Length: 281
Image (cartoon, rainbow, N blue to C red):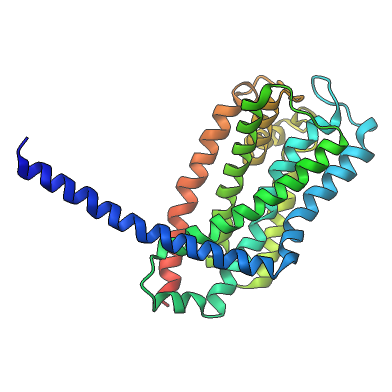
């Protein structure tokens, strides 16, 4: 290999490094801006946290004695993974509203006048909202521990379960970004966000086993992304899990990773394209 090729490769690497560093700086600045905005709007934290907290208290405590847990175990240990995964769904609406507001109040137009990466705008928005989801997950976990939830498979698999939940939250945040860019009407966004929350929460294994659902509905519920993530977390934490013999119940972690990868592959390019279109209007 000639010295010229080596020098050319080195220049290419340095060029890529020079491209990455400004984007990282832009993302950091935008995350800080978004977090300051969220700190002045504590209602958004409440909007994300309220539904999971109500679910884990109302269902986990009040219905404990009346619900049969698949495979034995306590209902609090069964329901916790479903409620924790539900945080990703509750964040879709506020993220979509935030994105639509940035478009409506001209903030995106101001970004266009600056030397800033368009990708950094979306990444900064989603990373800041992921931090909000992590805080909510911490609150829900504290409540779950108070009500009796416990992991049984050691620190490594416990951490892996929480990492999977954060990955699911990040994937759903891109759904929220796409929703905000496409719909723009705040009323329509809120209605759609609520519909997604109800539909994906109850057609899933979050609160009840899919074995008691009608056959076709149970199959749909098992492949629901929320069900896949909840089943994987139960497997990692050693909590009760239904063994129906289907692929999602036999290989829950593998299925969850594949489903999340598909979500990211589909939503991220669509959101970037929608943002490019919206920014040029």
